[in-house]
Image (cartoon, rainbow, N blue to C red; front, side, top):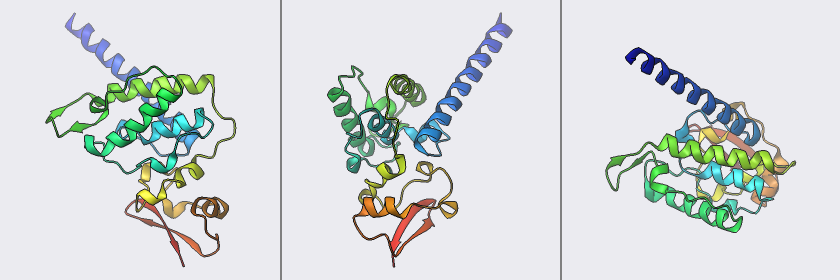
Length: 197
C-alpha cells in the first residue's frame, strides 16, 4: 500500500508539472513572454495582461507594476487590487486572496503554497480565454504602456534575451509618444532598456 501511494503521488506530481508546462507554453506563445516558473506569474502582472486580451484592451496597462517582487505583499497588492477591479467590472465572481498568491509573505512570516493558488487562477483565466479573446492583440505594444513604472522590464516578460531581440520602432513610437528615429535597444541586468540618442 505504501508503495502504491508513493507511485500515485509521483503520478500526480508529473501530471501537475505537465499541466504547468502546457499553461506556460500557452502564456509564452500568446503573450510573447518567457515564463518558466510559477513565481514569474505570482506578482499578478501577467494575469492583468491576460484580462486585457479578454476585455478588448480595457485594462489600464500603465498602472501595472511588472517588476513587483512576489516575495512581498506590499509590492504586489497594487496589481491584485487592479485585478479585483477588472474582475468586478467583468462580473467575474472570483475572490483572489493576495497573501496566498505571494511566494512568501514576510509580514506574517509564513510560507504559503502559492503554486496552488496561482495554478488555479491561471487555469480559470485560460478557460475564459478559450471561450472569448481578441483575435488581434499585440502583447508587447500593450506592455510598453507600463514603461514609466520601471527602469527595465523583467527578463521573463521578453520572449527571447534582449540582445537577440528586434523591436518594431513604430511600436516604440506609439508607446513613447516620440519620434522613433534615434531609439536604440540595450540589454541590462537581464532586462530591456530603451535609450534615445
